[in-house]
Amino acid sequence: MGDFNLALVIVAVVVCVIVFLVNVYLLVNYQHPDDANQAYFPKFVVVLGLSIAAISILMLPADVANRHACRHAIYNGACSLTLPMKDLWLAVYIVDAILVFFVIPFAMFYYEGDLDKTMGKRIKSALMWMVTTAIVCALVLGILYGLVGKVDFTVRHLSSSTTAFPSTWTFNSNGQCIGNGVHQCSAYTASPSSEKTWTMRSTFPEYVVALATIVGSVLFAIFGGVGIACLPLGLIFSFIRRPKAVITRSQYIKEATELGKKAKELKKAAEALRQEEKGGSKGRKFRKNVKAVEKEVFQLEEDVKLLEEMYPQGEKAETTWALTILGYLAKLVFGILGLIVSVVWIIHIIIYLLINPPLSPFLNQVFIKLDDVWGLLGTAAFAFFCFYLLLAVITGAMVLGLRLVFITIHPMKWGATLMNSFLFNVGLILLSSISVIQFCSTAFAYYAQATAAQEIFGHTLESLRGIKYLYKYNVFQIAFVVLAGLTFVYYAAFVSLPLQT
Image (cartoon, rainbow, N blue to C red; front, side):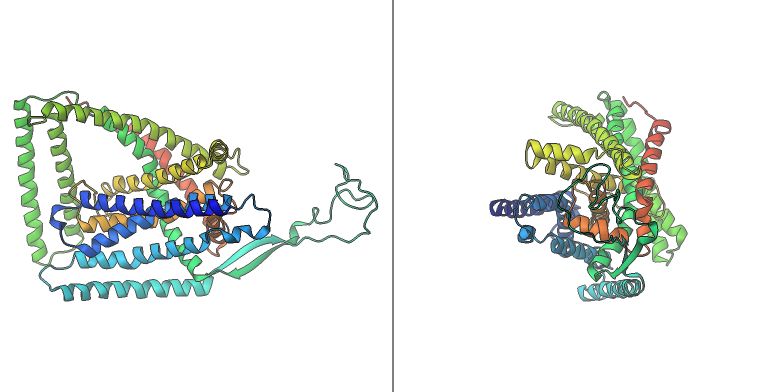
């Protein structure tokens, strides 16, 4: 067991380092050129937030592996010698909550502050907003914790009478208990009135995690339900709509001229909005017009990108076209694989979570079988399904963010992502990662049983006063499946397939 624990610690450290390096790489390549060599604090927050989100997803399979380290031990206290996963869970999610509700808002207020102000004034303004947010959050958390910060466990009081110790044992299907003529134990035949409610106060860190999970679960049900369909179908439809051939030079000039006219119109609209802002106009109509212009700019950039794909230029035009075709083929392959994973996820949710009792352990049993083949194979598959769910949430947020007026558009674009967009999406990822872990610990409860995550998310959270009914009646799971089904129908019925040549 000691060698296993040492190996687990080494793997955990290596994974953390890899996650950090990958996030730095993403930051460097996604950032806007205007943010180069500046905005270091927001960049630090972005890397830290992405690292916490990724590590939190990886902690669930690590929790399972940690539990396996002591399952064959010959003494009861063996599991106390493994990694303190419950403390690690609470630490990660407290940091998660602090980043989402305090640090990221401060970084966004500071980044979006008036550049004409001095650094001190920008920090002061951001701190005022952050302190206001902190006071409101602290009051809400304190009041809720004081009033309803308790867990109600349903227990059954069982008892039976005593009898003399027998000289012979005659247990069989007709007599399961000690004593002549006793066919069923008194405890077994206890009446429903023996059920009692055992109430105890939860710890404050667990309560903070629970409330953050509720907020994340709302986002997860909406974005995850839409994203689990959009993620694979978007890739497949991108292949179907791919340019079939290189256009002629005259066609390119015609299309480029039209896009140039559209760009001039958008520039005029943006200048008009800027004049309105200087005049003090920041009402609902102004914000709606700003969002409309942002959406048009995003669509213009997509059209420009598509036109460049259809007419590659330069000395390596043929190579560029070949790489473009290979890219679309990769989208088709990953889209088909993603569609299979999405369908498997939905089937698993229905037969294991929504039907009571479950029809089958399904993926739980698959992971167990994979572990029997090789120790980490099931854990790796488990981690993949959890990560896929997080990717679905991110995809859903991007898709709905471009279509709903009340959601600010913060697209992530390679080499053109401003720090405020980075911070917004990192906050969304962090908030959703909590609910993704909770959802996975519930969906894979059979595989992840007796883990620290199961204790936090499976027992305390689902018994928390005022919240437990959302989980008792599977509100989030039902909303997830319904939205996924509606999105599949939407793609099948309303998404057109214009073939571009």
